[in-house]
Image (cartoon, rainbow over all chains, first blue to last red; front, side, top):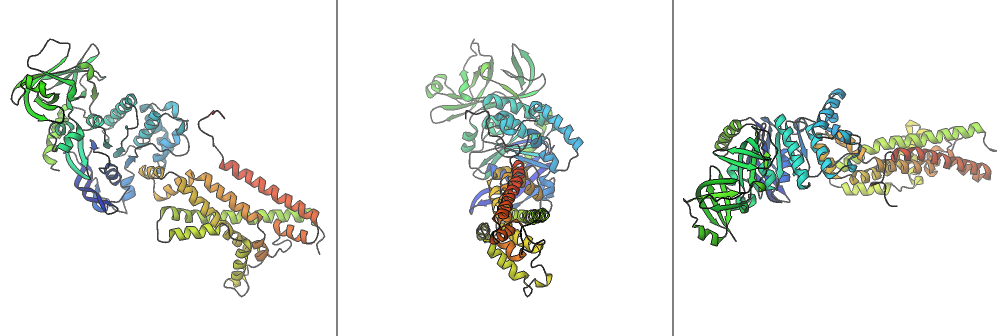
Length: 379
Length: 227
């Protein structure tokens, strides 16, 4: 198990005597991307501020690389991490000054400053903007500058509060991809808070569910999606199917992704051998008893493991080497005679799928760590 | 009895006026910043009362300040042994007391206008307590300079305090305002008017400098706009 970068023990926090956080144990491992997901008001931002050493918890201890954080050493540790608020706030001056802020206050030499500025502006495509004033930038550019001014510091730990939520879909994808690339390259330990499922699924190596101030479940997105511990968690995460696999080829603009014994075809830009995640919604899946002759590219076969009636539809889970979830109407369920143990074909149109780079580098490393993690994670 | 002033004497008065008001504004500014930071960052009981007192102090009558300083510096007063009464030092002290609340009050208001989330972001980027104060001061520059402008304007134009603790001694503690008062009393309206114009010109010149510092880099946004 990777050594913990940050540990929080016996955390309790109150606002106006109302308990808003109660977390017996919480840790961030070195190099991982941990995503905290929860509904609004669950205490996500407060947890993040406490983990960033900006707010002192009412009760509890924080350990940074095994050292207990105290009033005396708080600044030393605070300077080894960076927290970004949910919106970009800039100082007077140019983009360049804002990017260099963290380096200047850390007393980093002018030469090193210049070098890092060049490096980070290239990674985030900011070269043209350095002399601009922040208010002249577009929303996407602002968020790029914001992320860049955190990563330029090369912190041991970066904590992000809803970093992509204010961006439209295209921008979000673009900036998320840039961020992911840098994160992977540097093995940047990251804690990210979001209420957006898709963001969480794509970015998380490990997911923590925060509800009403408590961490209800942690694990890989695949694990939690497949086996949510409660109905609340299931409804928070939705019934998406999440598959991770490696790119084995390209065919007419579609990526061919190998996941276990299955091949998945999805849009996306990734190189051969790269790990990607594919997420699809249960309403995008059709079920059939025989594999029909259709234009649908993705067919998976497996037995029904669960039939769960929801409000208007029935959620059917299939074990196709991964947990596949589909919605059926009640008449369709009866017509197909869907029941546990029977095997069905599940089809998904390739055009409704997109594959995105996953946070882990290699499959071996990922699954190995995961196994260990699920053993050790007894939260 | 004085019958007019030589050019040399007028220059001396101008120099002393600038020296006393400039120095007292500078010292008041240096003493005001820590107070404003304290009131910004610390939440202690009675904070609101302290701020109310400071806001009241922004409009202190100069004669009253002069009276209190005189009571302290008087030969038999608590600080009488320093022999500061009727010296430029006494005038500087009185003017610091006038200028300080103005700079504290306006600086604090300027600090509180800065978005608290920006200050949180500065901490989250690793700022120490001093660096945070420095960042705050930079962000609130406009309002702080307004404080300096207001304080300097108040002290260079006041006559009550400098008269009371300086005594308007020719060649020693006579400044523009007390000289204007004297010449008017003597019926030298011409000279009084010239001195008044000089005072206004100096005020304008100093404010031009301070204002250009304050307004540096300011632009409306977006630009260009319709109007």
